[in-house]
Amino acid sequence: MLKVTGNGSVTTCDGITRRDFLQVGTLGALGFSLSRFAEMQALGKAAAGNDDKSCILIFNLGAPSQIDCWDMKPDAPSEIRGPFKPIRTNNPDLQISEIFPMHAKIADKFSLVRSVYHTAAAVHDTGHQMMQTGRLFTGGVNTPHAGCALEFLKGRRNELPANVILPEPMGPTGGNMPHGQDAGFLGKTFDPFVLGADPSVKNFVVPDLLPPKEIGEVRLERRRELRDVVDDAVRNFEASPNASLMDTNFAAAYRLMTSTKARDAFDLNKEPLKVRERYGMTRFGQCCLLARRLVEAGVRFVTINTFITVFDEITWDIHGSKPFTSIAGMKEIVAPMYDKGYSALIEDLVQRGMLDKTMVACLAEFGRTPKVNPAGGRDHWPNCWTINFAGGGVKGGRVIGKSDDIGAYPTERPVKPSEVVATMYKSLGLDLETHLPGPQSRPYSLVDYGTQPIKELF
Image (cartoon, rainbow, N blue to C red; front, side, top):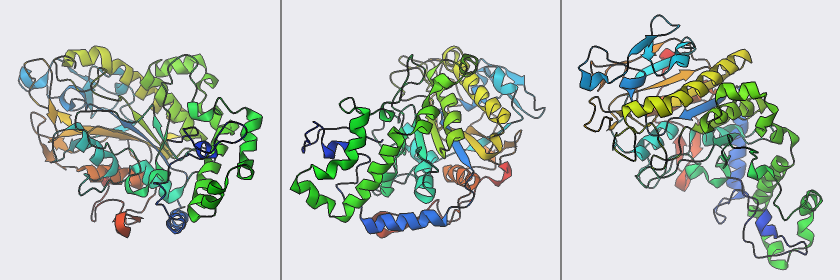
């Protein structure tokens, strides 16, 4: 996250420190060399083709139940099929759960993949890693999030960030492991811009688009002259290659804070109230609207975390017993806000002519157990679950893969997390054989060798 204030040690006559103001994307103390930066810039220029594609990744933290949402089993025993009934959609070949009536009206725009699985531990964090980076973190190697890899390869289109997380990064989910939402071995320079606020609250503003309180607009402009007032220690640092890289980050942060276009893109008050209400005046609904605005303004990749943690709010994590909710609770609490926000996003992208160039990927870390537990919920199940894609070259109205009679295991076209990430890369126009400079100068391909996207979607 871009940071423009902190506890610095070198204070100017204006009462603000250069160290404070230059603390924008920490450079690893500062082990990120100028030669490495030049290497990254060269790779980015080589990947400049297909520059008009974007991606909105909706990550359904907690994991929706495939059987109660997208892959219903109405002929299974009651302890399997659950309480909901399937409904028809505008696609005669597809039925989904009754808890998503608005999805049913746009089912010709998205396609389901009903056969995703992984074999790692059935904890949230492992799924978060694999579904956003393509790999499980092992041996101390943290693979970058797809949006971070995209920014590394293509850079930003304008003064707005290339990669944004809404409303904030994933919090605790019980595993105490990384969630795969940062730049990993690429370094903090390529971490996403984090909104860090709830866009549904009254008088919403983005903190990092405002000058620090102790710096007025005029004084902000004068910060570009800070080299003339800092002490010798800072001047010595500025002579180093790392300082040149830091100045690059400083310039990016400065452009963002002083950009009318950036402020306008984040300003939801510019939307008619009717539009905002169509998305739903919820955190998720307003994040969906903000994602559309950001992509429209030039942001390449936006990740929306439907929920932040599984502990402090009701989520898709429907274990049944408190503090979680039951399957029935999902219908009353979670489904309405999700149905409204997602359907509004897809309809809006269609109406604005943006869907063909904007992939909307709705992912989760695993599925839920086929059998309803004694508390009226379902537990973790990484052996089979459903995700969906719309736009960005994906043909709508398709169903890829198939699960068995109780939604427990894939029976047709099993899909691995790495294939899911490869699908996003394909939509974005990236060459899957592109290499990233990994730790110890070891080259890392975007996805594991031989991995292909889900070609049936295109």
